[in-house]
Length: 180
Image 1 (cartoon, helix red, strand yellow):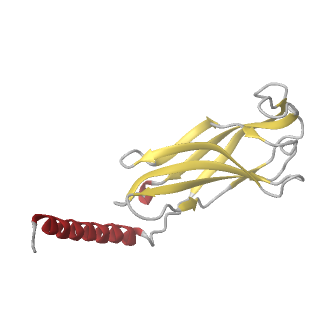
Image 2 (cartoon, helix red, strand yellow; image 1 turned 45 degrees about the horizontal axis):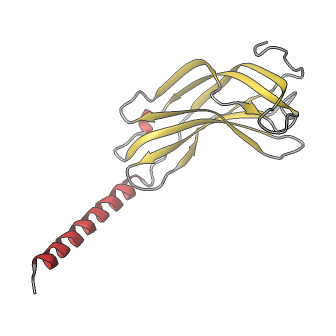
Image 3 (tube, one colour; image 1 turned 90 degrees about the vertical axis):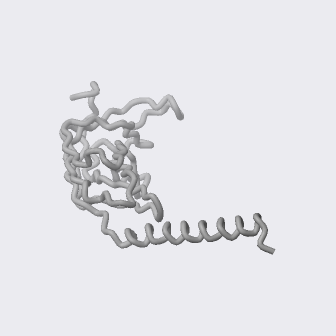
């Protein structure tokens, strides 16, 4: 009755049950952690141009260029269940065409053990700030916010918004050069 295969099956089932229990304990131990922190974002230079979008319909759309400063200390977000952080800077604004526009402008991955204190000045956006029309020029209510995902060893993938946002306005005139 107790053959080699039945003993192996019992050992494997017990091992998997123990591993599943440990994984659940790993998840449960960090489930209630507050991962929100304060971040300071400031725009240094803001320019808007009206250029043709050749990847779509070739009609002219607004393209925003901005340079920003970012300061945040995310070292306390890391715990024994956090492998890495995926940070991204989101711009939110409203236009007559759309009530909510969200554009990711910049991102960064911070691995466990790397320096999680961000204090960078004069960063250009990593991705284009296109609007699907002419909604950036003279838009006075564009909000920048830093957000991140905590990538755990086990458990849920929380999406966290930093405390503190920065609101800025695009100029009323189009620029003729990339930098005004």
